[in-house]
Length: 439
Ligand SMILES: Cc1ncc(COP(=O)(O)O)c(C=O)c1O
Image (cartoon, rainbow, N blue to C red):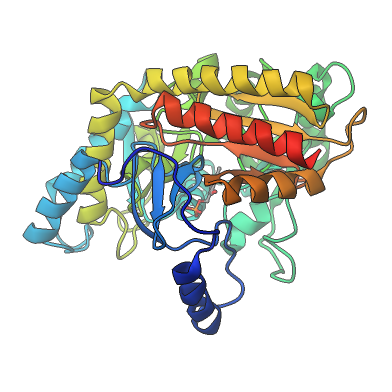
């Protein structure tokens, strides 16, 4: 590892060197771009980010579930170095190369679904979603796309329409693409009583408000990410998949955040044995290089006319080399099992904190995709204030935590899957200390 695996704070955060560069950032970079951690990073590996002032910060976000295999994972670095020295780009639509084909072979093999599959590669999660919808509309000859409350699918025009939350993603950016319909989401913590009725309500609304025969696709994250790590109750996803099948619509699982071992299986859909018609992936696929994919039933993926899909950079050879390195790392280090171990450590520590701090309303998630939802004690009223204070406190102590949630009150934990137990335990004790101090 190129960075010692230990938390160390040697200056205030941001330190003087970071402050200087961040000043340049504010002169040169559009103010529209957020910044969760005001520390300029120079190196990173395992579970540590090293900043320019020498602070070693525990990374509990993995660049939003991207570096599941850790930053600068050796197998990723080696393959990328070899590839970049060999050639950098031909455009796969102009002249093919084996890496692209190998990534598709791996995706077809690893994704759930005991049927023949094919894949196509793109650059970002949003682009994968755009293409999945194009494929579904073309294949079904229908237009309506069903999405869900609290869902997040990206920031392009179509994916903004598919995304639920207005601020900051959509405000002032409309008009949005038509034929996108948002349905109620089964959100156990915020639904009163039994959530089984939500599935019936969704089906009823689709029938009455869209017309089942108009639906091209039902698109859902198996565990909602940006919405606040909302895990639907058992039966909800299989019920939707079954309804999609019966009505001739495609069931599309957006596994951009949940994929690549994050939830303790290769893909989150495996938990209930769901076999989506199409799966979108990105983030964890390539150890930090920009790559995304749509994988699905061969007859669906092949129905599009030649040259109907593509793009200049989609499946760039360097990103494909990185993906092969990332997949190799997940397999050789058994990171699927590691995600479950990390989840256990975090859930145990968080439940202990929940018993002490009534501001923690719920601990939830699966594998190493865990979150806590913060509330005003004794209520379910969202508590974004405490969230902000806790995150700030932890940063000053050298721990990076990410936030999420429609109500801005969810603390999410997405550590790189190669992080050591000591670092996760250390991050959890800093969190405990933060709650004790800000409560
Ligand atoms: C579930 C899901 N879908 C799509 C996206 C969009 O991916 P990208 O930011 O790579 O466009 C994200 C990003 O957070 C996501 O979490």
